[in-house]
Image (cartoon, rainbow, N blue to C red; front, side):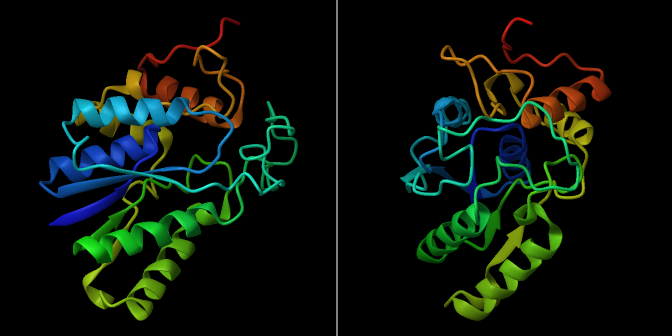
Length: 223
């Protein structure tokens, strides 16, 4: 089975990549540099792909979304929040339609190379409330792919982590031999790449490792 895996170098996408490899897929990783506020995750993604000996098969696309000024991940003048005041609000770290754009690029690539699966590591349990991480969105996108591409019903969209907690994702990664030290989750790392430990993504990650009873091997800014 040939699969395109959207791969950011983060905890979730690395686990999704490892799942596809473990079940024997012919994996074609797709990493998208989208004008985000740092490149740490891109560098980590490359190191993980080297570890899995997938660098020759991987593709990296530069697709600049820095013209979007409502997100702290694409507009460096906006501060990354260190806490969420309103748990029901979509945080400023949401990038408008990012997963819609990423999945569209993955669908085009999958159709071009004759892949049968698109795999994305979105999660709707321990997450920041982004609308493009929810099951309804993934299901709707799959319907769009099947009705709007030549591949049609031959191309499936999978989100294997969507119903898992961060604890469960960490545990699954351990079972699959994921090197968590190579993964990156922080929205606003220090200049040396150390994770801040206080942004929403760091807090969700740390919570997952703590609940799994595992020490997070990633470097954090001294607190």
